[in-house]
Length: 219
Image (cartoon, rainbow, N blue to C red; front, side, top):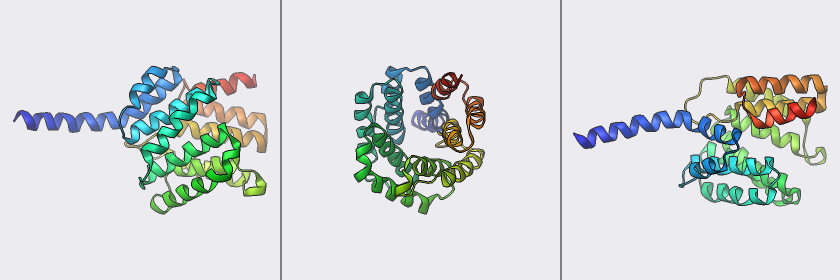
C-alpha cells in the first residue's frame, strides 16, 4: 500500500512539475539567478537541457559570452541522439545561439540547424517552437544564403497563433516569440510596430528581462 501511494504521489507530482517547470526556469532567468538555473540543469533530462540553454542565454545577456559556451555544449551533449521533435528544436536553437556567439560557426552549424528543423517538421509541423525557431533562422540568415524577413514574419505569426492554443507539456517560448516578432517588425515596419510587439511580450511575461531591456533602450 505504501509503495502504491508513493507511486501515485510521484505521478501527480511529476505532472504538476511538468506543467510548471518551464515557468520556474524562466523566473530564474528573469531574476538573473544563475544558482537556481544550475540546480535545474542537473540530470540528463530535456528539462536539464533547457535549463542549460537558458543559462547560456543569461550569460550572453549579461555580456559573459565565454561562459555561455559550456552550457550550450551541454545542451548538445544531452540531446545527442534524441530524435523527438522538442529535442530537435532545442538543439537547433542551441546551435543558433552558438552562431550568435561566433558567427563563423554558421559555416558548419547552419546545415545542422536545417537538418534538425526539417526532421522536427516531419513530426510536428505546427509546433509553435518549431515555427518560431524557423522564423529566427530565416531572420538571422543573410539574404545571400536564403534569409528572408517576410518569410520570418509569416512564420512568427503562425507561431503566435500556435502558442495561443492550450499547453500542458513543453510550453516555453510564447513571450520570446513576441520579442523576435518585434525585432523583425523593427526592420520591416519601424519603431512603433517594434514597441507594440515588445509590449505584447511583457503582457505575456511582465518580468521578461530581454523585453524590458529592449524597451528601455528604445526610450
